[in-house]
Amino acid sequence: MASITPITKLTYQDYVCYPDDGKRQIYQRAGVGEYWIVDSQERTLLQLILRDGQYAEQPHDDTVALSVIANVSVELSQVW
Image (cartoon, rainbow, N blue to C red):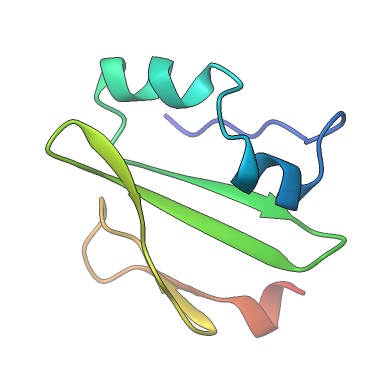
């Protein structure tokens, strides 16, 4: 199940610096394999992948490959 929540109080950089808004821990406990934090105004995407019970940032270029669905990717240049 996908979850899209607009960032209203924090900017993307605030979230990256202070990621403890509670969702990360909830998603980790629930075993959510991957989630993204997207700031459409800044055109940034933080991809977090669950590894050994903890989220790790996944580096990417213009193409973001999903880790939870094989052979699916998103071209960010087509999104922005």
